[in-house]
Picture 1 (tube, rainbow, N blue to C red):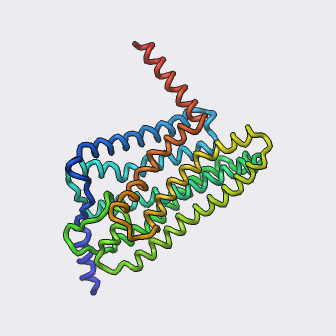
Picture 2: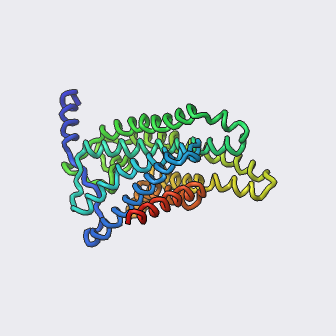
Picture 3: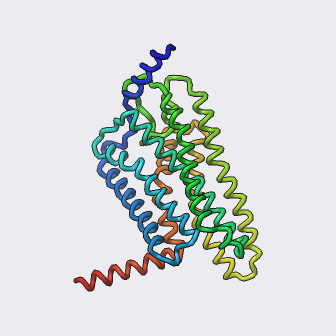
Length: 320
């Protein structure tokens, strides 16, 4: 194909629309309501954790600094997909332009990749705190923590460039191409492309393994050392306290990586419904459960939230 013809074909592709999968039309009101509740819960939960960490001086530690970054990530992460899904369901308009689809894909993959790295950084923080407690203040300095957090964000956004460029090169046969997903992501776009996608699939697997499996493997190895160190603690109270500081992070890692691995590098051949459920769990579940897990299992966060809730309640009673 000549360069001029290829350029014209690219312009035609950019002018195409993507038809996202729609929810059941006979239950659109219930589904719209549920999605709105999930989105509001995600925003409120993550923003509350971020604010409480910022205003409480005793929470200005590396662990809670990384947790505040996770809250911001999850807020942005859910905001790339849920508003579109709510609009889609409420209006029945499942059409999205190819350019907007690519933009959504870039943000979604960027934030997901950043979370992969950030969870590994949080594991390192727990490793130093439990396995080298005397050196913790020296090793986890403020400048290092800021650098690790910035590297997490940067690595995710740089990685997403590869996926976005790859997806932008895909060609679609129909004017309005139907995609078997509720939002724009790499695997469903690759599935419906007309041009050869072998290179795209290989890149997807290689990058997913590198950016997804490598941090996960690091987290597993780190927690083997952490648990080994905890088991050597003679005091049962000390063991319980050490486990409590890691349990919330471990649960989040399990939920996030299980859904991510199934969504990107898991075996294909499942029913469409199963793949859609996996996609929804990966895109929606982790941002909404993260603040719930940390609020339920972290005494310091619960205590700070309770204190400010009582202060607000007392202030309201005084006004009334």
